[in-house]
Length: 92
Image (cartoon, rainbow, N blue to C red; front, side, top):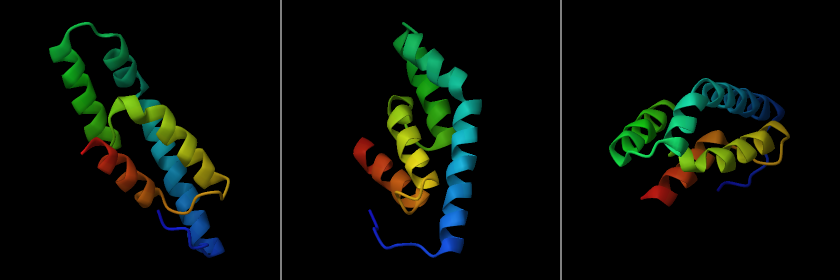
């Protein structure tokens, strides 16, 4: 992940991106809950695919992503795109 200090404008943009993704995650929380509680493996896969299409990660990664996005909002991490790339490469 890139550790270069962003300019104040870049940081504001990344904070807004983090906020937007956190809001989308909140909207898709029901899908993540269904994935976590469903007993039928076929349905679990469907819920996971829908969540991944909406958010970009598997629902099992949602809490870790939420923590990292909150770190972006606090200025502790730089880029939302780098975080998503890291999460997506963990799945591959």
